[in-house]
Length: 376
Image (cartoon, rainbow, N blue to C red; front, top):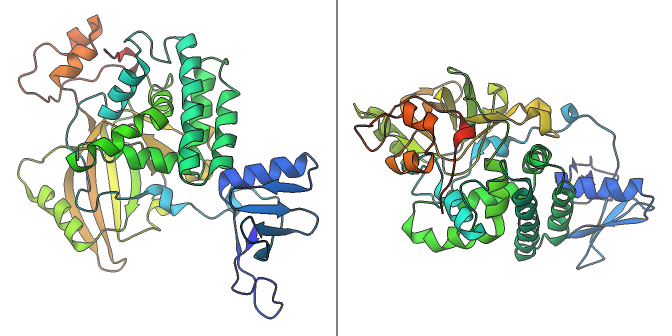
């Protein structure tokens, strides 16, 4: 922890202690346990002997630090992780793009792999994608001044390069669960999908972040749909204009279907999501795929559930709580398939499950996620 007080060395005012980011904290602890005298971060150097952090660009800027052994319950809840971060303030959600998200499709094209070469199906291809993902993470980290963080994340991913698809995915889930630039930057890029103004911007991120996204998306553990009726929660801080957009959808007799194009972290605990913002989204699963990150997360008490990109939703109802000064927006989650998806998911099971849809998008029965395939 580091002292964030205005006068950090003063004995006349109470100290304000803050936690380091997950990855920085891991790097500090690794150096400490290895018996090193210093830990070098992207912005600071940690001096263990004198228990101070020193700014890397101005050594006169120093702050006290302290080391505490604590459980995850001792750490503050990461409210921002379970809140919608709107990259485009005029566009709070995406349209319909089918089962396979555009970002994933572009990643497959970039990697030049076939439908039978997804990481969950081909161990050698998985190792190749891990190497590209690690290189992309490092390159992205350099662009934002987080090279040491990026190198640490990449090193941990490469540790599982030849460990098999299940171990690779578990490591990806662990890295995604950390409070780092990685989950923020990949989701920032994916949320731009569908906006012509930012088309080139998100496509440029495919080379850097696409391989990691594909490894995370192609989970070997999400072969069955989430339980129908399961409820997840996510907060948001929305202005009146954005709230009106949700209200307009809610008021329509035929509810429009929207989609999440990024990985969306929710909590199964209402009290975690509701601490942030003026809106609480209450999302009920009708049929779709999610994965429970609790077994892989450094923060199991957050009970994080990851909604995969491409999951759609309708806005069923809204209400305003005068006491809490908060809007409650109720969503129904569902997986949608387009005719293109029926081709890209072409298996005998798929053909049986989807006889002949009458519309471009259909509420047809689900198929196991394990049958998904991709075509170049």
